[in-house]
Length: 246
Ligand SMILES: NC(=O)c1ccc[n+]([C@@H]2O[C@H](COP(=O)([O-])OP(=O)(O)OC[C@H]3O[C@@H](n4cnc5c(N)ncnc54)[C@H](OP(=O)(O)O)[C@@H]3O)[C@@H](O)[C@H]2O)c1
Image (tube, rainbow, N blue to C red):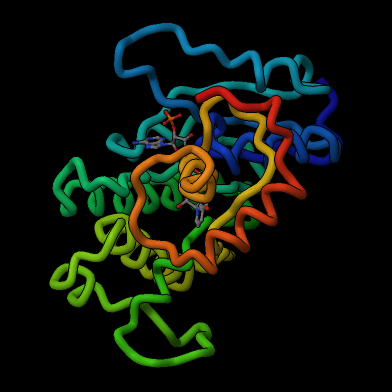
């Protein structure tokens, strides 16, 4: 198997971002190891949206891994030159205790970074953080930079919509940056805003569902009409409505 550009690991390959990243990496000539967690109902997962991607049959491999078992990612990372760590519990409804979600997010990320160091082949780690890790400061600041972090205690006290996700992303980003510095690992964190657009995964991504709240009539509290109008405009431009499976 030709691996001219090297092999890259993408965690959370079934997700909105993960699946796009896999598609682009395959198009760009990389080989990809992606991690997928087992279906909770133990059904066989339909991964045809990934296996049917151009070049997938020659260059895409699947591995089972779960953030609840941080060591489970090591086989997928072995021999890779880089990693996109996108897998994350996204539980806006706070159906699990915050400490559980945070521990899974932080320990999972650190397990992945340890496997990267151990591999001796990984040159760079890209971690998808979130605007929620910087925006909930409690201060009236219009421009935020690397020195700004969301206030975890404030999250836990005020409990705004999606607060436990915000706590988990804030603490995970801090942890991965600190680990990178301590171990000389090149860790890049992307502070992503709300993402909308076309998707290639079969499940309607959470962020798109939230953006389409006015269209779908689903119950969702936090965004202003102004914000939603802007997102809706983006969707009109970007989304292929035939792609819907709700
Ligand atoms: N989309 C946005 O607007 C947005 C904004 C800011 C930041 N982000 C960040 O971008 C990344 C990707 O987001 P997304 O929108 O692509 O989310 P997504 O579509 O919900 O994908 C999340 C992925 O994480 C996997 N995952 C969840 N819990 C896991 C666990 N315990 N072990 C292993 N894998 C697990 C999911 O697997 P299953 O298929 O098994 O559920 C799925 O593949 C996340 O880190 C998120 O925090 C996204």
